[in-house]
Image 1 (cartoon, rainbow, N blue to C red):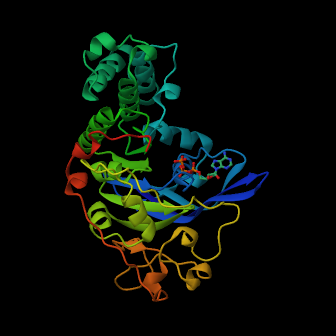
Image 2 (tube, rainbow, N blue to C red; image 1 turned 180 degrees about the vertical axis):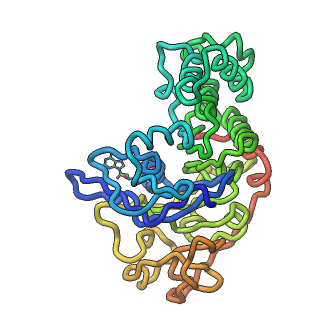
Image 3 (cartoon, rainbow, N blue to C red; image 1 turned 30 degrees about the vertical axis):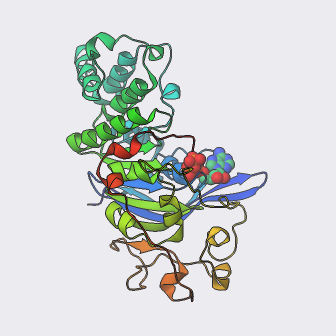
Length: 358
Ligand SMILES: Nc1ncnc2c1ncn2[C@@H]1O[C@H](COP(=O)(O)OP(=O)(O)OP(=O)(O)O)[C@@H](O)[C@H]1O
């Protein structure tokens, strides 16, 4: 059975400026043990998607419609207490900012042990032992000695490792990581991503990894969904997406992956910004920024299609993209060439000298 299946999820925020459709009829699925990337610029709806599946959307936000099937059961129909059991136990989440996730006045080890006692019914000694094992497993040196350290005695990277240990402590089936390494130094980022991947394999935990960085997805994920303005514009395996991207937005994101030895002024960002989600541009919402846009793109909203056949995408479609090129409407075509830097797909060499501020 598919571990997570999201069908036609729509989430809106009722703000003073108007109704923001942050996620619009979104569908995707994650298999057991799979590492699934969700990528897009700020405001694409990545975090809202993650918070929805934890049922953590608060006013002025509202889940309007759709289903979130976890092991076949709709999380949107569960009671609060059933949902509390799922959170932390079966689905755990790692946020970008470890500092806010750790309580500054309790020792780090105690915080993890507390989560273990709460969810797994271990006694004090068992919880302490499991905590030390986990701290060791996520790469914290002298884990036993550091058990009683307070969060401020840990570096940023160690704090994030501790959060990952806490998230994995109850052996969840799904770990949702929202920009887990964005705040960290690049070398530490690469190490933590490596460990996250290995841990997910060891624990047979699926990962939904949210990031604005396709390089991070390449390092960790099997499959990826590219989001723009609340909807997926492309879904594919990581290899397919890198070697044969089908959507102009994906191509734009790819040119923002920093390359080793590339001494050009890095990062050609895609010109323009994410549209106002209160009032999306008519037609394809990417058209104002798309170098290939034609008149039809201002009128027609492209559906997700199999680019090879032009058939509507289903959950079985391996590679899908939402562009009028695949409905046959574009006359000029998509004229881009992709040069793949193999190192991006292979190892963390790409992270050398990388700068998060680009
Ligand atoms: N609490 C809120 N109130 C009003 N609007 C919100 C709220 N939270 C999210 N939104 C809207 O939802 C849109 C999508 O936000 P989301 O945080 O999911 O984007 P994201 O892709 O995760 O970006 P980022 O990388 O910046 O977190 C935002 O542009 C914003 O307009």
